[in-house]
Image (cartoon, rainbow, N blue to C red):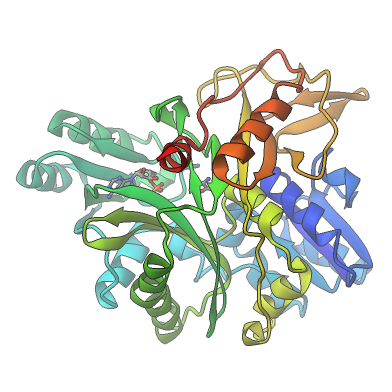
Length: 423
Ligand code: AMP
Ligand code: GLY
């Protein structure tokens, strides 16, 4: 099979690494890819926003299957256009990608199909939103409706903070994404991400993970795209997984199909495990980044036929097998992230991978033959262990060997699981 992978982050490096191990693979291309992905794929500099160019390239190279990594091209309808051109594609349609692209869309779906989630209201202007906040009181959560690179959510601990967040959204802090605002009840509990595949009819549970969204140790500071993750998430016991499938995932898949937007691809539920059980915080219509890195480390099965079955409506014919070990990834980011940071800072050394540990590239580039950091999140140091404590120790030991002066990482990725394992 000839495969084209769309994307350039750590998630796509992990996908490329795993797809490259498939005996079914003849050739792998990545657009645009990154220097880590270049170890597994031929990089092509396609303008992914120009769908006709992507289709022309796929035809020219006789690509059998396109795998779309990030959400932006999905929300822009790249998967629809590829499929319309007769090219098998992993990734949801633009209509189904609204599960991530519009928080209001997902909340309305939950309301229609009785999916447990926080009570909410949608607003197009500030004053009624503020009125609702005053009625409900704090803590309360303010969300820009659209895609805001993980930064459009304010968990407001006071009414004043909530009112300011509403003004920020409508004043354009998140551009068009903030033209509508969702105000949602605060949910208290432990978070987990639950990954599933769907071909529009069948759902296949993959695995669970826990992300670390705040930039600082002890879950402090502003939200980021994710500073580290581990899998599995111990809070997701088999009983909790069963409830999540029955109460959240299955009604979502059948509801999406009933509404004429069948969902095909990978998605993950951001869950809050509250005293009542699992409640939906949000959906994402792609693999999480950096959660994908730990999932790919743990996946024993060949990824390629699983993705292909998802894309071609035969998901009921495949299974996914997982290593029992824990995997943990630490994100090395540019100093200043998620605020402003210097670009093109030199990375002097990346240690070699071993059986137990590997460094995925997320925001790197080659400039004049030297490896430099170009993004906020730059490297993902990922390791296995018999438990999270061991995976954490191995990941940090490998991270210590990375030579990059402008980099930093959280020192406590996995702390909740490590604390549990101590008991
Ligand atoms: P989201 O982008 O929707 O995942 O939100 C980012 C983060 O905000 C989540 O990972 C949670 O930590 C937090 N969050 C979002 N919605 C809620 C909620 N209703 N209650 C408590 N925390 C929330
Ligand atoms: N790490 C969170 C996300 O990919 O949305």
